Length: 402
Image (tube, rainbow, N blue to C red):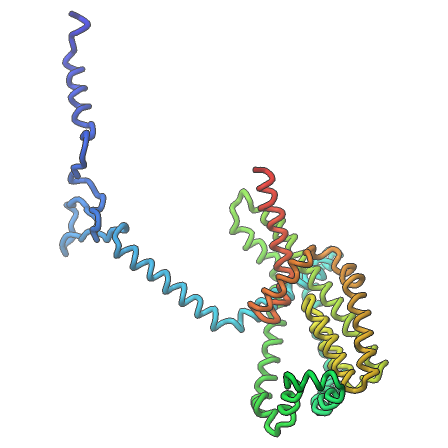
């Protein structure tokens, strides 16, 4: 009898538990239930006694309603379109900024070398800027007049050079089929060639002024980025989670070192190509066009793979237009030099900078040139090297540990 009896307190607890238990089936919203009804625009909120003098607050818009999702989804699409249009309009400015960042990263190893010798970063950056201005000014003063005369001579002699090309049977047969040289010759001999393709003296002056302003802006931005590079790196690294910040900083520093070495190495290889071409052209009798052609060879040599071939082809065409022996000499010389550059000069200079397989280099240059033209082709190789480093050190190592 004692075991079957229940105290009054136990009965009260049982009744309380039964009253607090949820219903066995179905949902009966109470006055405090705030879940939205299916398809409802507004949320169901309980009545409140804290009304203002201007009346009771209305229910908020439900985040689960079709209107809310559609409105903010459409707003996000519009924002993306506006950002895309803004980037397209600011493409020229973004290109200048990208070039300045690229040059700053390329000059950073020189600054780091001066810092390791005990100099302050500000003084080293100032010295680098003064040297750059001095070199550009000296080149403009010393070879500016000669370069201008040779460019004028090359432009004036272009119709005659093209006409001499047509004296060769193979080239004449090729032109009769495709009419490439004849079309270029006809355009060069047109009396309104300068106005049609360069826009007249006024537009030429504006183009020159625009180019000078762009160079000045790039120079100022390069010096600024070079001086503020440690601060910029710390700011970017701070965006990473604290647990990964050290590794992100190490990978970022390694990428910057490789890009800097690549820029210096590419400039050295281009200077070697331009200097050797200049000496060769003076030797074989192309001295009247040597300076502009050597500068073109050096600039094109900055573009991996295809740049050196284009420069060699241009010099060979000019040499062939002068005379057949000079043209053959140009072809033979650049066949030897391109082999020497590809297997001796370039690997030795780039030994400690980037490690990119040849097929990746070809793909990167093609994609970069298609996306951003010459600038994309120039930046393709260091970007590919950075991506390969991230893949090897992040994705592959994570896969090895899985």
